[in-house]
Image (cartoon, rainbow, N blue to C red; front, side, top):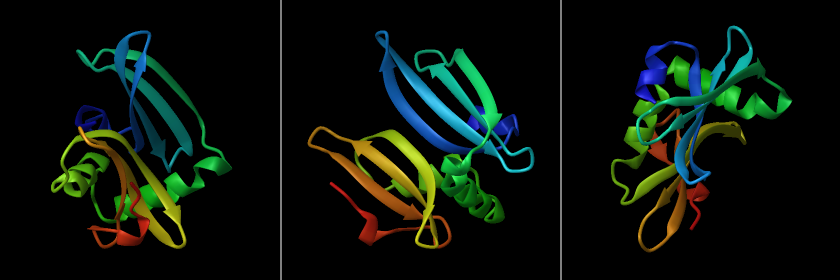
Length: 137
C-alpha cells in the first residue's frame, strides 16, 4: 500500500486479499478526485509483482468511497496510515479495508481474520476512533 501511495496517483479506497489460481493476490483500488478516475491494481502477494492494472472514470457506485477519500485527504492522512491506526489494537490478519461514507459519516470498514473468527469493524475518519455502532461479528 505504501509503495503505491508514494506514486501519488490518488488515494487508496479499497484493499482486498484474495486467492486466484492458487496465488495470494492483493487487490487495491485508488480514486483520483482531480481526474475523476478509479484505478484498480492486482499484485502477487509473494513478491509484489503487478499482475493487472485498469483505470476508468468513477461511477455513482463509487461516491461513498470518493467522499471518504476526500475526508481522508482533508485530514492529510494516507490510507495505509489510517489502516495502521485502526488495527493497532486488533488481533489477526487484515483481509479487507474499504473507505465508505454513509449517514454523514466517512469511515474505514475493515475485516480482520483470526483463528477464532472473522470480525468486521468500522473506524471513523473524522474522529480517528472506532465506531461501536458499526461493529459486526
